[in-house]
Image (cartoon, rainbow, N blue to C red):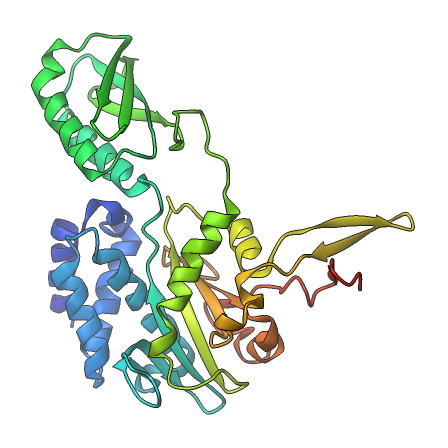
Length: 357
């Protein structure tokens, strides 16, 4: 077992895509390699399939995050119900496609469909470019620090072209200069280089992507809601049964370090706008119920589960319950290792803006 863990750890360190480089060393690497061995050694072929698929696809940016998410979910459910109670790629009931991970326990069944979030702009490409430039110019003297910014039109092709430009022209760089890449699709990347006491090239400042290279991009709750809606809708045909107090249909999404979503935005997207009224001298909280969970088309989902990347967080899995299932989910999942049920705003002291109370 130990030899297998070491072999897997070496393979991860050498091949895992740089967008997930946090899992290439230290305790995260130890956790991931041990968990993969754990999945491979179970008697359930679906779990072994998840582990093997990750090892085959982990060098590809479009596949690695999704399989990592399935691994994290499977490991979390095994901690709750035991290895013999968790299954991978199971299909039964009225499901027309296999569900990624299923857990059976004495009190409840949980079907979990995993949907990795690869962000809506280009943070992954930025992260990959940052790793590339620090490796490629690690011995550059004198060293430079780089102020980096790009617009939302910059895509993978833009960054490939920028890499080629930098390799061709790096000998002509001079301090306090700007390197500008302007593509044919209105894609724009600007690097402002300054002298650094540290050898090599280092991106020290990264501005958020924006359409016009402003310093920040406005939060668009509507866009967040649309992306989550697609993730939820694509999961519908994997659930075998309607949600009940004993049947929990979860859609799990990831929150990597550079994800476009933030916790407050997720709450707004799922439940609606929250705020305060002043009534008789007191602040009264409200929710306008415009979120996804108030649409009948998403009644098939018990909750959205936000899986935070990283093995050492106290609560890796944040459960955002559908209003109809809040009490049942809290009763079963609260206190389970690695899970926390997020307070639902309409049942925790808030009033309905539409009706007042």
